[in-house]
Image (cartoon, rainbow, N blue to C red; front, top):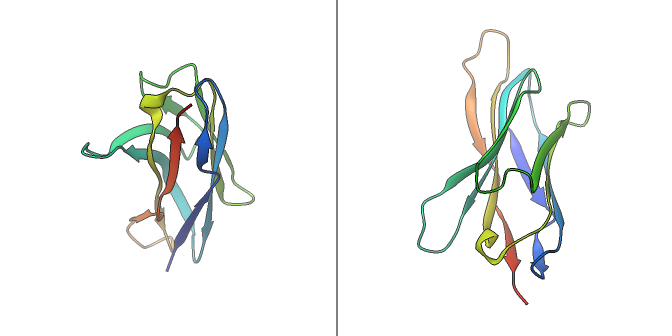
Length: 121
């Protein structure tokens, strides 16, 4: 079983920065994609950023130029550097991974438990 553990959330003032981390553990043969999602109260979960197996990244328009997704394949970790934070960035941030446990296995979807990010003065 694969587990994803997020860390790095917290309370920050507008204009501040946070760095979220996501560490993967368990049996992982290959990783097809790793994404960050967020969900604000009363809102649907939305994709914030993604990074594919070849390192291609994509960021939502609302965070482009402020957030940066990255990964460390040796540590099976993913990061989200968040700069110039705004109150509207307040949400629970979730780590997502699509991975296969063996060469013959179909990839499965895995989610972390979420980490709260609050941007407020």
